[in-house]
Structures are given as C-alpha cells and as structure tokens.
Image 1 (tube, rainbow, N blue to C red):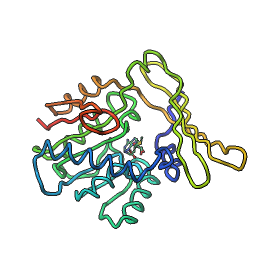
Image 2 (cartoon, rainbow, N blue to C red):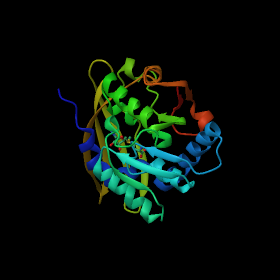
Image 3 (cartoon, rainbow, N blue to C red):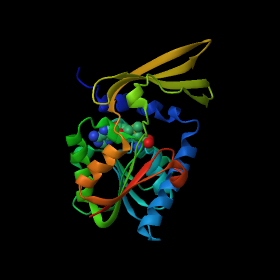
Image 4 (cartoon, helix red, strand yellow):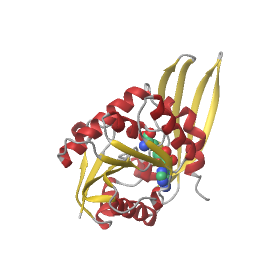
Length: 256
Ligand SMILES: C[S@@+](CC[C@H](N)C(=O)[O-])C[C@H]1O[C@@H](n2cnc3c(N)ncnc32)[C@H](O)[C@@H]1O
C-alpha cells in the first residue's frame, strides 16, 4: 500500500497541532531553552547564531530559539504548518522567516547556517535510507564547517519488535473542555507503520472525532547515527532526556 502523505497530514493538523500539548506556549519556551543551552555548550559563542529549523511545523522549536535571540529560518514540508509558524512568530513580534520547503532538497546556499535542526521525529517521515541520506546530506551542505547538526527523534525502544499498537492518550484542557489525542499504529515490514492520529474534541455531552493518517518508519537511534556519519559528520552523540532536558533524545554531530 502507498504511504499516507505527510504533507497532507500536517496541512490538515496545522490548526489543531498545539492541542497535542497541555500548554504549547510553555513547551515552546522549554524546548527553546533546552536546545539553546545545548548549542551554546557545543559552539561556545555568546552571539546569536544562524539557525535553520528544516522541519519547523507550527514553530515549536523555531519560535523558542528565536525567543532566545537567534536568527532563525524555519521551513517545513507542510505549507499550512509553515504559515502558522509565521503567524505565531509575528504574534510574538519575532523576526523569523518561515516558508514551505522539503528537507530532502534544501533551497539554501552552501554553508549558510551555524546550526541545522530537525526536531520531534520529523525524520521518521523519511521512509528509506536514501531519503534520510538526501536530507542529512543537504543539512551537511548548508551547515558551516564549524557548525552543528541537531536532530531529535523518538526512542522506539522495543515498540518495533513488539509491534506496539497505540500511544498513551494525551489530555489537554481547553476553554471548551478536554481534548484527547492518541495514535493507533499498523505495522508493515522493515519497521514502517501507518498510524491513525485520533483527536476527540468536546461536543456538548459527546465527542467530535477527528482522524488523520500518516506513515512513519521507526528508525533506531543507532540506524540514524550511522546514516548521519555516512553523510559527513563525526562526533555523533545521542543525549538522553536527563542530560539535554529536551523531551526526547537529541543527536548532535559536527561536520567533518
Ligand atoms: C512531529 S512534526 C514536528 C514539527 C515541529 N518540529 C514541532 O515539534 O512542532 C514533524 C514535522 O516534520 C515535517 N516533515 C515531514 N517530512 C518533511 C520533509 N521531507 N521536509 C520538511 N519537513 C518535513 C512535517 O510536515 C511536520 O511538520
């Protein structure tokens, strides 16, 4: 079966994406702070950095980093998500360029950025090694030689082996009532799975159900690290949640 389109999925989700978080603005600030501390520790520069977030979504990390004073360019496969990132940045009076763009074909000149970031498991939407190589190879091209690659990804642990079928429901309080979000996973071969992303929205005494579908690949952290090395990076390191204070493992790597 053909994979479900990631662009369509995130276009349809863009207006509701913040509902995945109990408090999206708080997460923006926390994630920005954690990533800012990490890149400053590695690059040892007090000045603002040129940062590309090449899978920005509605701007969870890009806006957080712009709030910390960095010059952020934000792109995403989903035009609707990138447009919302732009709106959210303007609402906060931040100068941040946001536009649609595919990380498999980055539309930037060589050596344009101090940091290239792709956060919150965006790489899982790249279903083959060739696609990951195209994306990470492009990141190597646009990051400066003294710069840093930062990727964050879900640690699937034994989910792939065990063919886990669902995620734990997340509950968000809104003025209209609670919103519940969870996923059902349908496994294929080679660690690829289609998922139903299900949101229950309060509707009087009942629920309105929104179902959107996408396809991901449960890359192991070691598989991603190896692909990053093949694309011209070394000092490839996964940082645990305890170490980075980010909500999922963070990979840093330096250009060779
Ligand atoms: C789980 S969301 C995370 C978004 C954002 N980093 C955040 O945390 O809010 C994954 C994002 O990856 C984007 N994405 C998937 N494939 C992409 C590609 N080939 N190029 C750029 N972005 C892509 C999706 O459109 C989506 O916005």
